[in-house]
Length: 248
Image 1 (cartoon, rainbow, N blue to C red):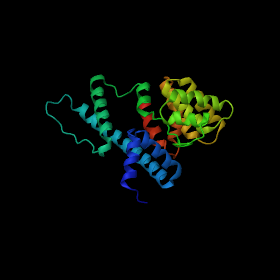
Image 2 (cartoon, helix red, strand yellow):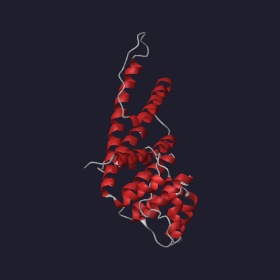
Image 3 (cartoon, rainbow, N blue to C red):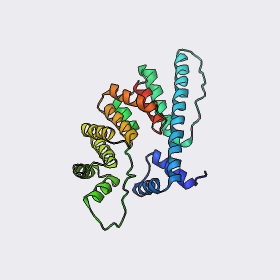
Image 4 (spheres, one colour):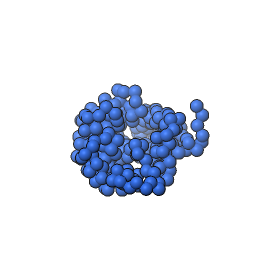
């Protein structure tokens, strides 16, 4: 199925975290109402995972060749893998890691830095804000606060709403809000409840719970959760495998 260049550009900007508020609202609306667009997003996730995995493999080979020739007087030219233009930032990051490997003989990253690299707030695809909605309730205020990046108020309102009626989508967004605010233990609790009490969104809850463990330095639990996700065929599998390689 063909997709417009405008749609593809929108999806690429989403994965590069470059959407402004208006574009994010448009993106979440399309995810909610347009199955073809949602399919495009899933396809792009798979492509990104495959390219990142292949890129890391090739750059590790490049690193080994470079290290093996550090003591030689002659300069050895090694062809670096070619990447798509929108992975230029990733290539720069890999270059920094290569320098770190040469100087410190270490390719590992701290759990906190890995969290920062892999955490992206889950978009509100459950109840997108409708502009001009005259029915202002605590519920609409909560979702609107999340959409606008007011995570502190969103967390307060979601917590109050969940006290009387637990909803999986609301739990997922509350966990994300708490993670952004640095309330890691509260976020863990949100994702554990979501994973335990609901059948839907269990994959998302496990992904964000693994990031909670990573953020708090509980590498073993993060590794266990990532292995579980990596053994599935879902869209998070590639990201989980990639992150697990770095945690290991």
